Amino acid sequence: MDNTLFVLAERLGRSLFAKGHKITTAESCTGGWLAQAITEVPGSSGWFDRGFVTYSNHSKEQMLAVKPETLLKYGAVSAEIVQQMAEGALARSEADWAVAITGIAGPEGGSQAKPVGTVYIAWQRKNEKPLIEKLQLNGSRHSIRLATVKRSLEGCLVLI
Image (tube, rainbow, N blue to C red):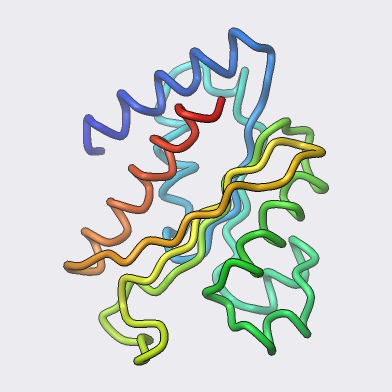
C-alpha cells in the first residue's frame, strides 16, 4: 500500500479514537480501497465501523437506500447520489462519520458532461449536512482511484 495512505489513515484513526468516534465508508469507483487503507492500520477496529462497496446502481439502492429516481435524474456520478450514499451509510452503521465516493475511473464510461476522472466525495457527520467536493482528475484508472482515496482521507483530517 502507498505509505502516504497509511500515514493519513493512521492520523485519522488517532483523531477518531481520541474523540471516541467511528467512521464508515461507502465506495463505488474506489472499490473498497478507502476501507482497505483504513483497515491497514493496526487497531482500526476501534474506530472503523464498516465499509460498503456499492459498485452497481442496484447495490446503491439495496444497501444504502439510494433512490432510483435520483439515479435516473442525476446519474450515479453526481453530488445528489454521493450525498444519499453518505446518508445511507450513516443510517446503516454505528458510525459518527461517513465518507462516500462515486466517480468514473476509466478508461471507459466517461461522457462529455462527465468525463473520465469526474469524482464526487461526501464527508458527513451524523445529523449534520454533508460537505461534498467534485474532483476532475487526470491519469490512469489506478492514479484516479489512488488520488480519490488520498483526497478522501485528507478531507477527513480537516473535518474530524
